[in-house]
Image 1 (cartoon, rainbow, N blue to C red):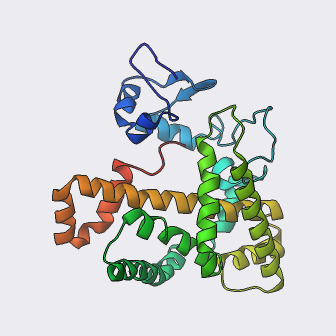
Image 2 (cartoon, rainbow, N blue to C red; image 1 turned 90 degrees about the horizontal axis):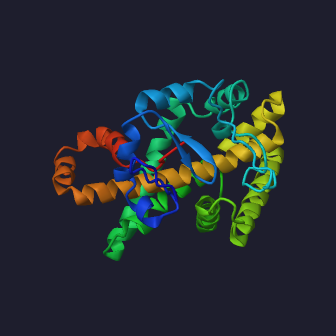
Length: 289
């Protein structure tokens, strides 16, 4: 798609590029940000100091995506509502402050025994079967089960949720300027309809789940309007599900390709927290922001 004079090739729609983009990243580190033609001019900021500077300077580098006038404003899963992912202060500050009340370190620690229990059940099922395919048996199942439980979704809805989520996320693979496939719109509308009903149900009968907590905050202080509340629930499901699935997959692939590191981890399990951080660095599930 774009071949610069310095042997720069950046094409995330090329399957070979996506399978191993890292050799193509190296030339981008050799100089200042390059202007690439990715269906329009894009400044590719790649060096650590430049990236951290840009991410912290919302006045010059906004997180609000520029709108394509050729696309309907409500085509995406958030239907035009702002989320933490695509907003700047003070809106970002308000949304983050509200959500962080229900994502304290203590609350996350309280979830750990249940997450371990779900993971153990998945591994026990694989052991009983006599084989384990990591993506199907663990990586695809665990994140959506944990997030759905946080949201108060019944267990028998997990598979449907995973299908909707994967279909919506796969819309990002559509070439710019190409209409999103019909299955994207079907899955998006199904997800939005499901959670709109769940939010209304919690408004009438509150529980201990995250949707109930966010509904209560919304009703008490109007800190998050109805569209923002629905958009946040969808963001949590879509972003949390996809990233954790790919972290597990990338991590197991890297360990499979480096048996000495796998053996070290088996012999020294206390290295696991550092190993997870290194997997995030070595082959992260998110390549850009």
